Length: 225
Length: 225
DNA sequence: ACCTGAACACCGTTCAAGT
DNA sequence: ACCTGAACACCGTTCAAGT
Image (tube, rainbow over all chains, first blue to last red; front, side, top):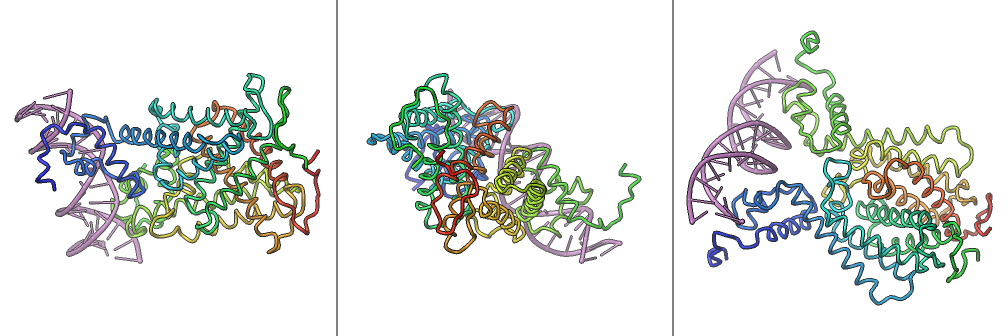
C-alpha cells in the first residue's frame, strides 16, 4: 500500500494529517500518552517533521481538543435544531454533552480535564474558548427562554440568577459524564436511564430553587404542585 | 545533611518513602508525569530500587491514590463529627469533598479522574474501593436521616430513590469541583460563595424532586412554600 | 530480603543539513 | 517553506550481580 502511494517529499497537509492521526490514536487507545513519533510514523514522515507544525506535544493536544469542541458544538446545534420547547432544547443540549463524553472519554477529558492550561502556565488556544462560549450561549438562551418553567429576561439584573443556574446545570452534566465514564456509579448498561433521571430531576430542582426575578414570567407549571 | 545521615544499605521503609515522595512531587508539580527515577533520587536510592516495592508506575500511583482516599475520608468524618442536623452533615460532607479537590487538583484527578482502572484493563486497588464505599455510606446516612427534609428509611423499597439522590448529589459535587479546579467557571477567588450557592440550591432541588416514598416522614419544611 | 549497575528500547526536543 | 538524520538527555523496565 505504501509502495504504490509514491508520497512526495512534501506531505501536502501534514498539519491536518497529524491532528487526524492524534484523534485516531486518542480514540483508539483512550489515552493521551501516545508519542509524537508514533504519529509521525502513521503519517509516514520523519519523527520530527511534526515540529514544523507544532511547537510541542502540548500544542498538538490543544489542536486536538479544539477539534473536539467543534464536534461537540455541532452535535449540540444539531440536537436542538428541530426542537421548539426550551425545556426540551436544554435537555437535548445536556444529552448531547453527556453522550459526547461517554462516547469518547479520553477526548472529553482532554477538552475539560484540565490537561491544558487549567492552572498551568499558558492558557488554552482561543478556538477552545470560542467553542466553550458558544456552548454557554446555547445554555443561556434555553434558560432565558423558559427551560426552567419561566421566562427570565437576559438582563444585567438577572445575571447572577442565570449564572447560578448555568453553574448548577453545567457542573451536574460535567459530574454525571465523568461518573459514568469512570464507572463510579451504577452498573453500566443503563446509562441512558441514569442520565435521564438526573437530567429531569435537575431541571425540576433548578426550576424550584432559582430565586424569583422581578421581571420573570411563568410559562410552565409552577414548582409547588 | 545527607553526609551526616549515614543511610545504611537497606533503606528501612522504602515503600513508605517512595509513596511520600510521590505525594510531595504530585502536590508540588500538580502533575502525575513525574518519573520513578526522580522519586528514587529523592529517597536516596538507586533508580530501580522502587521496583522491589511496586510492579510499575501505575501501581505506585494506585498507592498514592489510596492515601488520598484515606485523607478525604478522614476530613469528611472530622467535618461531620460535631454536627447534629442531617442537612448540615450532608453540606459538610460536600464542602470537605469540594475543598479537598480544589486544594490538590492533581491528587483529586488521580483519585477520581479515571487514570486508574476507569475502563482500562485491571481495576483499582481494593483499598480505594473501601474508601469510596465508606464515603458513600456517609452520604447515604445523611440522606436517610433527613438531610433532604424528610426521613427516608434505608429499605430495599427506597433503594432507587436513595441511589438517585446520591447520583445527583455526587455528580453535582464532582462536576463543581472540576469546574472550579479548571477555572471553567467564574472569576476565581469567590470559590466559597459559588460552592455554597450550588450546594444549597442542590439540596433544595433534591428535596423537591425526589419522589415520595411510602414510609417517608417530613422533618423539614416541605418544598412547596 | 533488599539494593545496585549496566543495558535495552524507547521518548521529546534540538540542530545542521538536505530538497 | 518543508522535511531528514544524527545527536542529547532523559524515561520505564529488565536482569545479573552484590550485601
